[in-house]
Image (tube, rainbow, N blue to C red):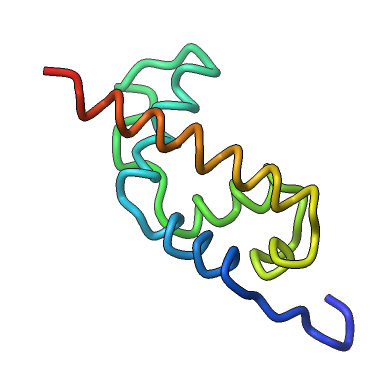
Length: 97
């Protein structure tokens, strides 16, 4: 990173909390299985942890640090899309019997 480290704000804190969320980590497990046509045996639930979620989120938003979310409009927009998709998934997964 540059000499002056970018400080995170509200979005960075939201991203950190999201990465700690077990449901988000499960969402990443299910998402990867679906995307790559894998079975639960190949990629069991609980595979992703908070560090994996952070790494995935940074790669998806094309950033080095979650702090950049508060200073990069494109990354922030991508993060909001991820939050929305996760929210829809969570809603529908809770509605299933």
